[in-house]
Image 1 (cartoon, rainbow, N blue to C red):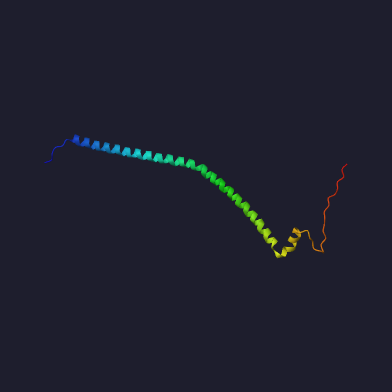
Image 2 (cartoon, rainbow, N blue to C red):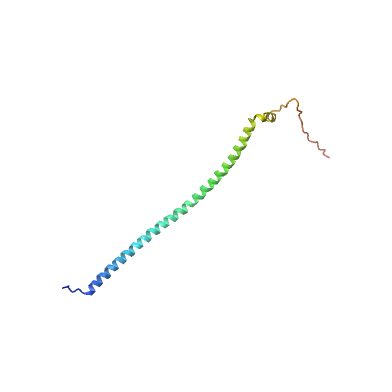
Length: 119
């Protein structure tokens, strides 16, 4: 034979357990929301602090790229000048440019400006 139990006690204990688990679940969800909110706040503040640094680095990178481009142009000019100066086919031309001497069969030409008469 089964002992007689009152249905009120069983229902109360079930309700009490259910309320306890609901409160526990609500507390867990609240803690998770607070932690995630804190992490979100930290992430947003970190990003706002990093954005100016990122933009300054991009500006420096662009400046360096421009300097590299200018340096490459200069190297190209200097390299072409170097090759021209040491090219055996252009030796005479380079010598004439850098020295006032002229070959004997060449005549020197001097350009004179016309004198303007002032009235």
